[in-house]
Length: 153
Length: 126
Picture 1 (cartoon, rainbow over the protein chains, first blue to last red):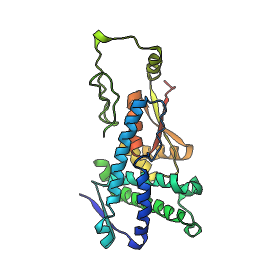
Picture 2 (cartoon, helix red, strand yellow; picture 1 turned 30 degrees about the vertical axis):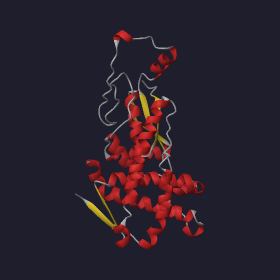
Picture 3 (spheres, each protein chain N blue to C red; picture 1 turned 90 degrees about the vertical axis):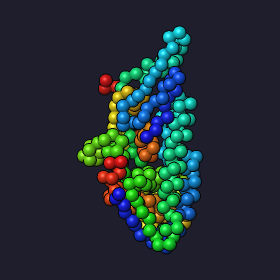
Picture 4 (cartoon, helix red, strand yellow; picture 1 turned 30 degrees about the horizontal axis):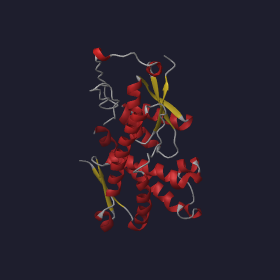
């Protein structure tokens, strides 16, 4: 099984986890991407949303599970074909929710490019944007190194 | 991948997955057949014919992520997936699939699982 281990800076990442956990909590009841189908039958729509929320909760729990004892002892998180797809999706969900909750004022161009002087941002916006960038980095790592594996499963 | 199916008859279960063939079994009880109300008829007619699955742009999801999703969900090769992703990025939307309504819904569900925003629209080219 292909596996990548990433050593993260505890001093940088640990303070972000509170924000990630808080935002992740909001994903228990809200879809990260709004449902854009208006003409579904109400019963069907309810079933659909419930199912999507269940998936979302599982993904987010897997993402948060990365930051357990091993991470806090040596800063290492590991990705493999069992968790990669789930974590890539969880990162997308949390990033969308970060935008919804904290980052709307930054504008779409900034969010797309990720280019902004962090020293110009005040808390809690600065920390939220760092979470946004950190999760994008996790996604890039997984897609770059495990893409073929993800597609094969 | 599980897709919450429409409840049709006693054993209609919807789809097994977006990428696989639709297995939408409909049982009709001949002894209990009733004429459809006009509203249902209109809905049924509106759902006939091909539908497009359209992915809309968002400023959050990475280009590489969208390419991955298109490859994974639709089986696109790298070139097609990148072209579709760039359409979304530059034009705000891309038609990624066209076909029967039920299967189009299944694709939208799957895209939603990947946290992309997708809509359905009638494919008026047909």
